[in-house]
Image (cartoon, rainbow over all chains, first blue to last red; front, side):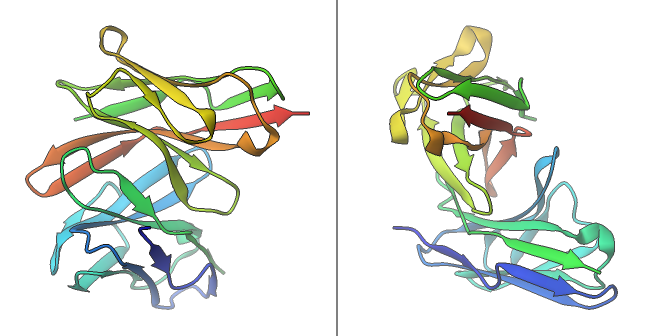
Length: 113
Length: 115
């Protein structure tokens, strides 16, 4: 079975802190994604990566950056956390082929105080 | 660009009665379509996917979805709801690009099952 793991289930940080969220997949998938999920808004794409060291902005990249140094690992970075970044963050991976589905991690619930 | 509309933000059914969750999409060509389920405080799990092989798609836990191109719909159904079906459901369409797949999510339908 494909497994996508995220470094933390729950995280509490202070405004202005630098925050790292890590995601690891074990199926050699080409594509990896970071979403945030907020009530009533569904999932919104922050960034995605289609290969090592490659990244593309999603719908809401402002205030975030990403890093993909190894194929299995995709990190989301909040350079200076703000209260409006309090949310559920979901990582996903996909093989990238036609009709390929995404596999999701369990999510990280981040609270910024 | 693709888009997905889930027509109901909340659906409430009694245990043992049918479930219908509605999804419409916009696409200029034959899309790949998915339904995912999310239980409280969990990640998303694939229920089923349509990839043009058959218009009626069977998924896990007794769920089905029918692709209707003329109506641009991909509604999710189940003949008899179970308490464990209470969750958030997302309809998703994907677009295959040179840079890999791009996925477009509906805003979700929250299913409540009344005992």
